[in-house]
Image 1 (cartoon, helix red, strand yellow):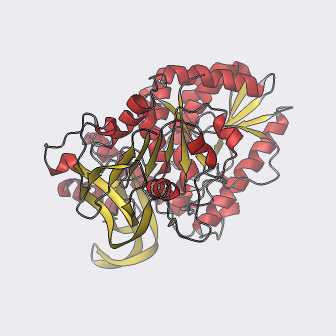
Image 2 (cartoon, one colour):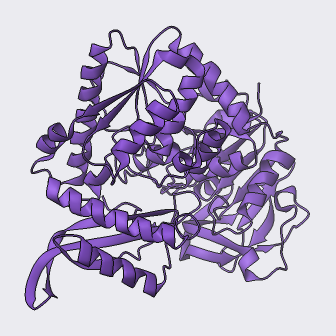
Image 3 (cartoon, one colour):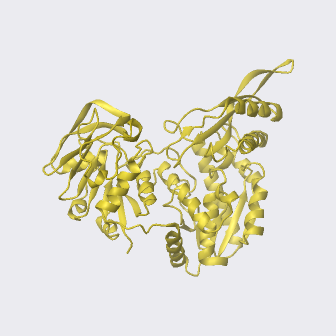
Length: 519
């Protein structure tokens, strides 16, 4: 059995980032709710546990607790934020509400550089290197017996601590986020030096394991895949096709919510170039009719999810016996939907391929990418031999332009949005900023009109918002600092070339507090 780390999720929106960082260290890990039965967790024979952060206080009524099997296992434990407080509290330390809460960057002073947790930690390279990310109201006031302090900040005298004998480690800050400059090093130290894990989590190993898992799950059954043309469904399709070949049928539904030219691109790439069995279905009128008058974003997602499944059921029935529905679900989809096991988290938005599927769906799901982040998906796609134009295609939500066309969805509004989006992306590509300066960029059509002057007359037309972000993991993101001259040129083209638009604005909101998408 491969070395494994188990992360117990206490409801933090950063929990999945812990998994991403550990996998970056080439160590396999899985994330489970702290409520998960012991037999499930221990079946992995974990070499260590990580306790995530969370929104609770250890003193809250009904607050999440530390399962007995964690300490009884005898393997190393790392508590992060709430996980630290819970570990300390459970072992006899004191936790209290901080008079001065700590949210955002802080400077960490490591007092025990010889600790394996901080091996290689750069203490004297300036404030930027020592920066960590804090997000807590409570703090540890006194340590349990056997614990020693390892590090402090100005507001947290016990920002890191350890019981070396029992291999219990605890940090108040979040090493999983990019704002903790040396967080990757700390987590790598924990899994390699403290837990003794090897480095056997690689794309090649993942492909081999998933191919075997798909074959075992599917057997002689037949699978249909909803192929959008995006990297997630494309990689899922290539992986499943490697496992079961012609047992897979890809169904591409043209719902009229795609970007400019994408419907044709999907057909040409997957049917003609990759040789996958592809059925292309024109369902534009069905979707427009179903979305007529629907303006609430969650209702849009529900309508699209329902329509997606019903069309699949209808088309699959024409194929004869179909047993499985494959989807390109990935980790960010799961966390932002606060999936069924994340009872302690808050729903940010639902995803049609996570929380919006109807209860009477007749298929069993095949989701080989469910435990991967976007960057991992791209690495798997490269290992599978997919072309760069597919692997590096701009991320696109499952509901498509329906959640970028705010308010009423009509064909004319979709066409205006498509045109504006194409102009923006075209100019980014010409400026060599589509991948280097931005990780995601798109246009949004707002449900408002503004007064303008075009030519010699008054206009009262719609507003386009441009959104471009920089990000490593799509869990957090910052707005892209695009040059003013570039934005001016894009604005000029959109106003001049897109019928019905007289104003262009640029979104400078980070994630959090916003999301990357508007709906």
